[in-house]
Image 1 (cartoon, protein in one colour):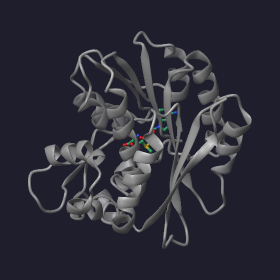
Image 2 (cartoon, rainbow, N blue to C red):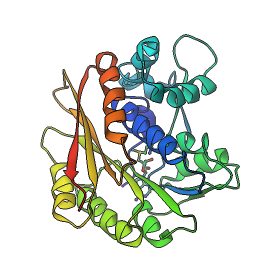
Image 3 (cartoon, rainbow, N blue to C red):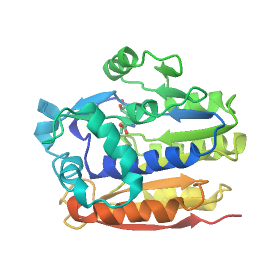
Length: 278
Ligand code: SAM
């Protein structure tokens, strides 16, 4: 079942949290010169049209990245610079954003010569769009199951690893599949940094993922959650990111960013250790 299309949701509050976490992790890891193997297990498309029919149908970006962009003068943390630069680079004017980058674009914009990106995307149309965009020797786009593909590709050639796991959770079993893959991938590359995104849903389905990670062997797992102050009656009440092996100081810096984003996004943020260092 591949009915999910990220174009309806690109740039919403959850994307802001996820992509802020991703850009922060990347820039903190890139302080060291050694190459990083990046994996994006559920890549989606490349660049999303915020004026397009799909984005306009939900209006989710209006309450997300558009609100953040309008307030960018009040974002004091220097950690916003990379995210704002990427947005400015994709958009022409000072007014509303017309285009929003998907996760492979956030990766590719900052890849250094020794870094690589492997992006998995199963949806045929999304895969073709992404392949057409990725003309770069450091980027591979594979039409394969992202969880199985990741397990197969580890450990990487480069000394360091950054993985984004961002499924659409259309199938309930994805929560436990993600936890199982995280454990297997971590067993193969224990120093890797893994970012796992999940929705916070009224029925609490996401707890299956968190419970499984908490009960398993993976250590040093930070849990960042944003919750909407006025959640809709149905749908996402918030969004979360688990970060395995976060760079030192990552939690504090992400918390500062999310606190500054709280007013524009209408969210509250918490960050805590789900599993502390062993
Ligand atoms: N990571 C993207 C971003 O941050 O911009 C959004 C990805 S979207 C939430 C999830 C994507 O995973 C969809 O494009 C969907 O087609 C794709 N997908 C679904 N099942 C998959 C699988 N088993 N392996 C790889 N991709 C899959």
